[in-house]
Length: 253
Image 1 (spheres, rainbow, N blue to C red):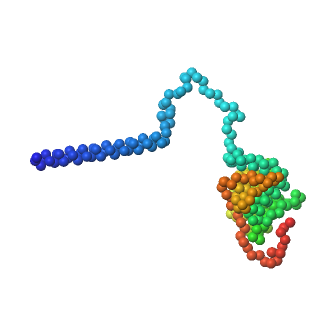
Image 2 (image 1 turned 90 degrees about the horizontal axis):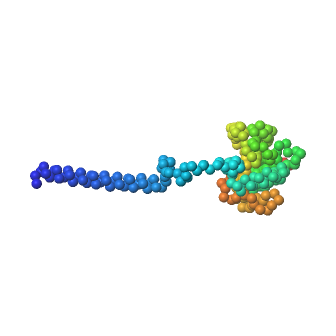
Image 3 (image 1 turned 45 degrees about the vertical axis):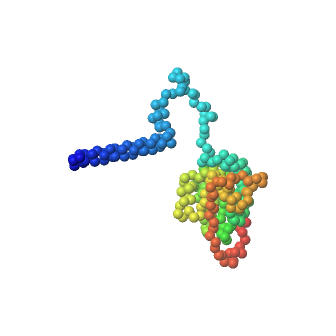
């Protein structure tokens, strides 16, 4: 065989090898795409192009009645059990609600005192921890949202008395965006803590985990919270060393 024939044979072999490699590569790629499509399921175009199983002259089903239409889950899509607990809390009278909230904070190591009806001045619970005092206002009344004006009216009279503690405002409903912005103001952000209905449920669950004991619902010895929900962290006042004179002061009554 002359050199020209040898070169032609070599080129032919190389071409066949390349074509075989290209064929194998394309085959593997096609198989991968088929597997991917199989996992994804039928596409919208595929579904649209399929013949309908409904006879052509059969009328479309009637729209469901308004009562049968699924309604949005209340309280920011809370679970049913959580919503039931909120409903039970709503059924409490104002004083029982204060006592229930006080029990929750006791689980986090706070000393708590529920104020009398006639001299609370907007303060429902006085709390003490690490020699620092905090105040709680419980918004039990059934309003849809707590406005910024209500937060401001509670915070401003006690701002000078907090001194490292916190002003907790707790509602079984929600806070307006203006109220949230007011609480996030750099002047107050380390002092005002807003707890809405959804966070209150998580707070109860966290309290039970923290104290390793159930928080009984008023009038019942049975815990009403679920243990698997995400925890809520309650801010803790920093430990401070106070003068003996201040340490001798009685817990505010």
